[in-house]
Length: 190
Length: 270
Image 1: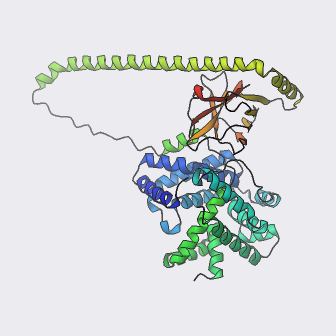
Image 2: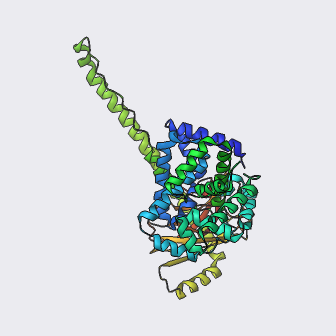
Image 3: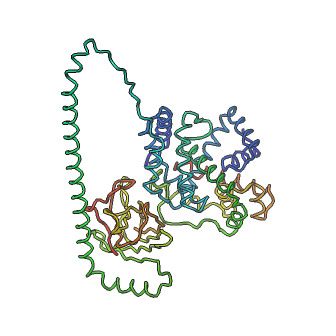
């Protein structure tokens, strides 16, 4: 397990080297985060082949745009997660799978806790990964559902509100409370 | 002090559900407010941890190769600057000798490469033979299981489904067992393992499909097991599998290898 501050320092240095055309730094960044990013892409797209395409595009973007990384907008890992999520969502939107998506989002209950290995094990160590999973599972189901729909589904705020059949204000407040709670609970592990 | 409305906008920003204009407004505020920066950064880390708590799906090894190849630095172009010889007579005299020397060097390199290649092929053939021998040794032990699997195969209406039972090769995990289901038509499979010991962080288990069509086993990706030694995963291969003759699991360095390390054979069966 690594220290978060050291991870940040290491990743920032990796991005600096990638911006300078260092392929070994790029390979290191890939090895560190491809599992997490691929998992996110598969979760959003529900298709491993498309997720592979997304991951390839994301890493090409990281290679080309590492110099434009802005620390104000999050850690390097968070930047890569945002790129992956946005590319996957763009792909869903452009392929007009929206209605199917809403249907899928409606049917899919909150993700059930699972004991198989997660990307967090590699990034935060096995014990912390278990703790993170417990804290995520301990979120009130309505908050967790709203957060997961917002991040993984590509639905707009209004669509989330319609899917969950709750007023938009309620959904926003739920997401806010859930995110604050998650931050408070996870702060000590990561 | 960050008010509730800004906390709300920050949460929605982190989850990517703000409109372009709203996101731009948050980013503008971020540049002027250190506390907001801290909040957004911490929320992003929480968001990443939430995403990271999903069961991990490992990308195929070939994707790594593709990604790294697409950023290959362009070959360095060495400019050829012909030098003007002061005496053309000397150049003309040495040219045939230089050509002969070059030819000799090329022949030597080619011979050396051919020899190395032959050694590699021999080594891989030997590895395959060893793998076959191990599978033969297991055949007797797994006779009952095979009969059960054969019955299942017969009754299975999906004729293209290949079901295999894998048994442990490890003395310290004799109870480790796995089942592999491979759909020849869909070219994808499901793999279930039980009682396999968890690995240190710098190692992975790697699943292989042995198709007689290929000289070496075909990688089907790497995986880890949970604390109880169990995992269920979906897998694909990079090559078209016509006959999934056997399945094997080896223990490899993190991320896996293109060819299995046979001395680290963990499970095998067909």
